[in-house]
Image (cartoon, rainbow, N blue to C red; front, top):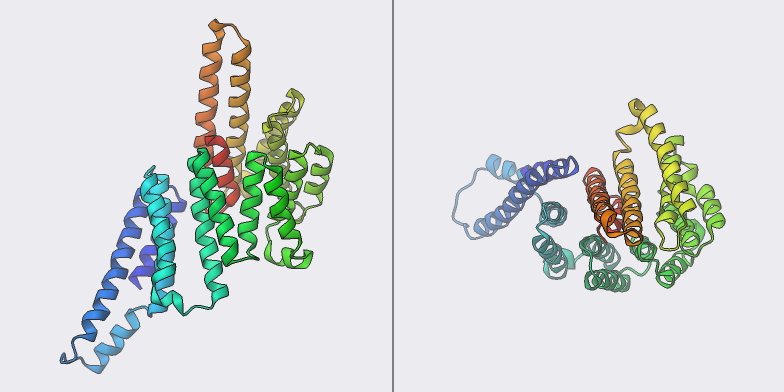
Amino acid sequence: MYVIAEANLGRIRLASGDAAGALSAFETALALLEGAGDGEAEEDGEGEAEVTADHANAKKESVLPSWKQSRVGLQVQFGFSMAHFILGQHDEALAAFEWALSTLETAEEWKTMPELELGAVRAHVSILLARVLWTLGGHDREEAAKAQLLDSIADAPQNLGVMVSLAAAGAVTGDADLMDTALSDITNLGRVQVQALDGEGHVDFLISMEHFIAGRTKDGLVALRDSTRTKELTTTKAQLALAEALLRIASLPSATESQRESGRQATERALILVQERAAFESGEMLGSVARLLGVLYSIEAASSSTSSAAEEEGSSGVQHREAETGRSRAIEWAQRAVMASPWEETHWTALAQASR
């Protein structure tokens, strides 16, 4: 049971931003799991040892069954990977994710799992690995992330998380073909099944983003307004969703200054509303607010970079510094969003965009 306690401690520390403390807890959990395996092997070879009935029962209750050990171990590997990533230890993070995928292929406990369930687990690991690759940036890593997601579809052809991640990748890069393909696969599942699987309304939100990328601003706003996600949000969260959508428009290469200003104004209104309702809602929305600020600073950085190209040399240096400051702030706030809610894929998308 100490394994579960250490794993939970690691997750709590990770969510609160203490990546170093989380890594320590996850390392302890991994050591306990390895010790449990060694202990079982030694016990099998000690047929001569005398053990009382009470002691045997107590030991049986304190040791996790092997199938549960494998599941807890995989969760610990996830956290171990994320802690390394947040600490900037990217090679270690990627190696840990590869280790998790290898475990699924080789461990005996996973070989007895139904193929459908195993495919879902593989897809989950692949999604996390793809997000890390994407966030690290660079063309090769982005292509590797896409390949990872496309490969996982073979294991879980109807996994909504994989499809949504591919659509999100298309949204970030402005790749309309990738986004159209992913969303077509999703809609082919049928509206009822999608609604059952997509409780948070990510699909509807991505459909609105598809309109924005194609320049259909009005259709995008209508889709966002009618989406399940927005309808079920509180007033404050709906304002944040609208502000983010307008900021996404503003971040497109073809965005006009008027569209950028609309995004800024919507953000200001949303943040004022958050401040007014801080006592009621701000705690649970920390990640969303941080992500929103990250997107806003990304746009300001891009705007400063564009302005510096048109200015004379004297003011160009100032504009360049403003752009770098905006980019640094964007990455900082996006990282805060990820640390506040590492399970939210929109936070990872914002971090990837800020880091580009």
